[in-house]
Length: 230
Image (tube, rainbow, N blue to C red; front, side, top):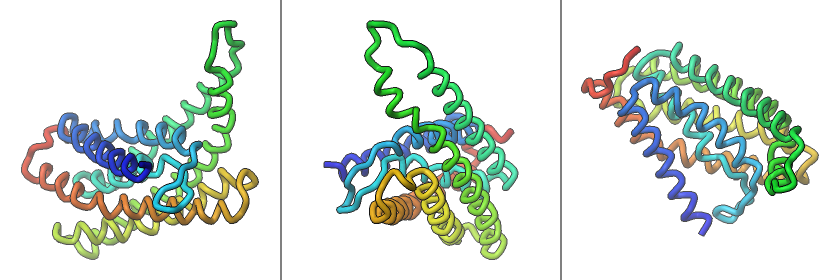
């Protein structure tokens, strides 16, 4: 059942990105970055079994951020990709600060969500630190690597190479840094290694599957179907 839900969630994520891109152009891609960062950092607090491995949720929606920055790099520029990363940073900091304030409010006698909010968001500062460090390093590596492979193989036919060659390493960097900062001391070491392995494999699968959508995004751009080019 988990595997089926994972596939459905993957389809929803890719569809949402394409809809946002087609309707709002570049702004739609910018919009997806805070959505993915916020959802990923809430979902990651939940561990599940997927394909025989113990993994955290949030892998799909977080990994789609790399697809967005690759679309920005391919269709617009490296500068636009870095702007998207900045938006993600801002969204994550706002989420953490505002939710830390929210749990400080004394709940009313009728309240029934305070304990649940504490369970999720009391862990958020550590997740934020892990996310910011992993996000900064892995995404900047992805942009630099994508630009490197784009210059080396500029043909549109080679989008699959620059997309996957940049993302595979970036995802590994992200998985290792985030897992050990966020969960060291929370889980046993064997669980940590399993989380690193499982999250990387799942992100790797997402990276493979997002390649056709990058080609489609580029095709729409070249055909002039993406009107917003501010």
